[in-house]
Length: 216
Image (cartoon, rainbow, N blue to C red; front, top):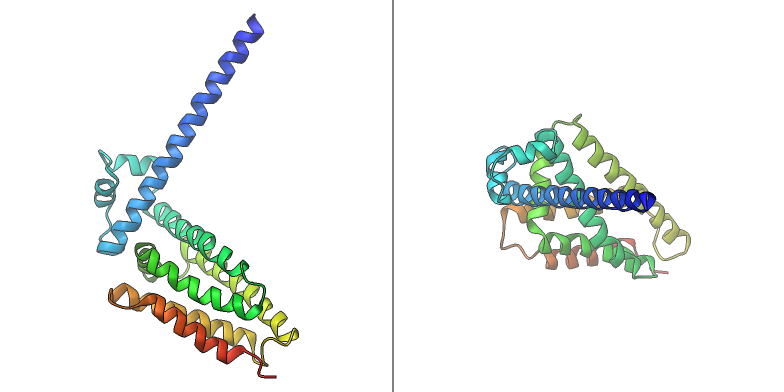
């Protein structure tokens, strides 16, 4: 009976801990979501803890300080959340295609469909990255992730060239041109709500399809 009582007590404690962890995770996500909306609306520099707390429905800014070690920590989590969202949104659409040309088109279109579907997320990360100093942890992490993704995409282009699907060109030059074109549309979209981002994505996909496709 004593062993059973201890087991029961341990289970209850584990249950309380799991519940607490779940609640804390949910609260952090709530704060990040509020930060994204506030940054998108008023800009990086005017996104105070007071405004974020108000948007999140918190009684005080102390709740933000409890979950995050200051503003930089919160901004890093905002960038990480946007990157996670982008990965989960874009990757399945790319992997749904077998041809390299289909994957390239899906990559371009899905990046800009993401911008159309989650405008605040893209506006927030654009604001943050344009405001962070070059050597800050958040900027370094973002650039490292971007460079790693480009490396993977460059290798895919090389495979497409070896398979005869793509013509001869420098894969690094092409991928950086594609990335710059997508980023330019995202920047324009943050200042021009009337811009048809999805149409721009289709046009860019057509452009780079013609630039990469083998004619033989």
